[in-house]
Length: 250
Ligand code: G3P
Ligand code: CA
Image 1 (tube, helix red, strand yellow):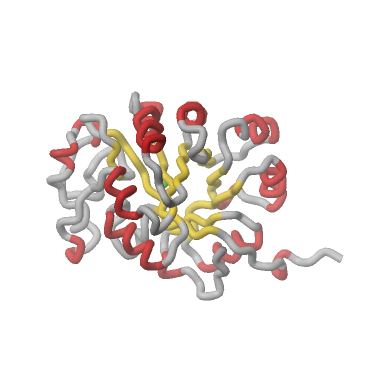
Image 2 (cartoon, rainbow, N blue to C red):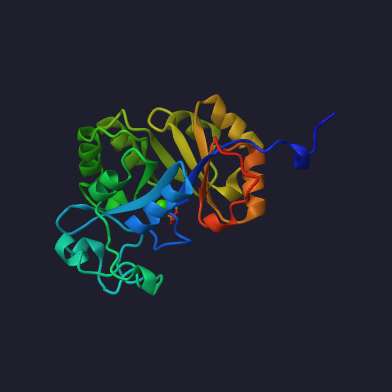
C-alpha cells in the first residue's frame, strides 16, 4: 500500500536565509546577516558583484537604484563611491545609514556564526570575478562552511577548478535531464533548484549522483511542508516570519 503524499514525514533540512533575514532587515546588509544569525539560520545566502575597482561587493541588482539612495551600475562605481550610499532607508528609516558591505567584511562578521552561500551574479559578464572570488576563498581559512553557487555553468566549472575545496553548486530555473545531471557532478556538489521544478523522482535521481538539493525561494507555510515532504536538503527562505514552529531543523 502506498502512503499518500499528505502523510509522508516532514524531513529535517538546512535553513538558508535568502539575502540574509530579508523580510526583517534590508537585504544583503550586515543588519540582515546579523538578524539571520540571531534567528539561528544554518546559512545566509548573499549575492556578489564586482565594483569598478574590482572588489567583491554584496548586492543583488546590477545597479544601486532599488536598494540605495544612489544611482548607477555597480561596475561603474568604486568602493569609495558605493560606501557613501545609504542601503537601509529604502527598507525602513530604522536602518538609515546601513552600507553596502564588501564580501570580506561579511566573511569577517559572520565567521564562526553561520554558513555562507555566495551567489556570483552574472560572472560571465564581469571578467575576473570568478578568479578574484576563488583567490579570496583559497587564502581565507574560515571556521564556518562556505559554498559558492551561480546560474552560469562554465563559471562554476572554472570556480571548481580554481578552488576545488570550496563546494560549488548550480542554480537551476529549468529542468535538468539525466545526461546533464551526471556530467555536472564533475564540478558541482549541490543544486539550488526553483521550487516549482522539484519532484520526488528528480530528488531521488540527484541523490544517486550524490548531490545535495536546495530549493528557492520559499516563503509560505504550505511550501515549507511541501519541501520537507519532498526531502530537500536545504530551504532558501525569503520570509522568516512565516517559518512554522513545527519545522524540524538539522
Ligand atoms: O539562491 C537562490 C536565489 O538567490 C536566486 O535568485 O534572484 O534572489 O538571486 P535571486
Ligand atoms: Ca541570490
